[in-house]
Length: 258
Image (cartoon, rainbow, N blue to C red; front, top):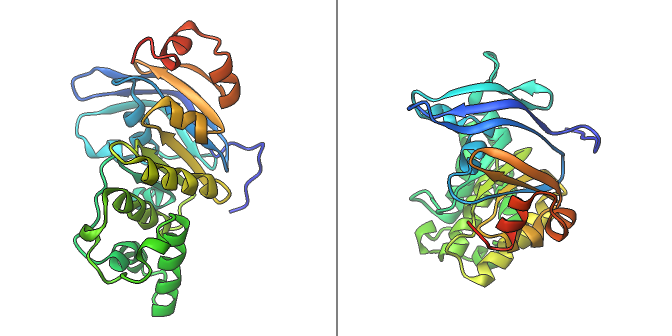
């Protein structure tokens, strides 16, 4: 899909999200997310960040009793419209969670699982090419190229996380959501994942909930600060981190709370 830099990839309009007990997790959120950027969404616990990420590909639908108001537009189409194919939406908007969840199969089969399920690539050579490209893009190829038939459980935590990124990439998404993908990982694994993210934005849009503000500084183009479900401030990362407009943003990024 051809993107133009002046047309948002995602538009969030007057979005509210309520848990099954009626508690509001996201409060009147309005935001535009551009193609081919890394947007870091930062904030302390219970700021609605994970809920926002899960709403962007309707994983929030999986919890009964929740309620939404407003719109989320992907390529100008409201993802909550009745005619939206949710399975296809989740292919376009893939998600990687904070805890790696490799499937109980080989490294190769983990990445090939999605394309095989979609049945869009039936030939063995096509599957192999897709798997190799995804693993390379996730900066994992050099670690696993000689043991693709080994169980995914044999990989380290950092390698498993990069495998999960590769598994999402094999489905050729347009957007990738990452919910604290480096929490608990060592600095070397974190650096490799961040390197992957910098490469990925040339191909797709990345929305990242970083595990700390330092990661947001290192990799993001823009940053959005949320507090108790409310968007407090957003803008170019260099601008927000060097001179935040809101005192609450300043207090958070300087470590006064959170």
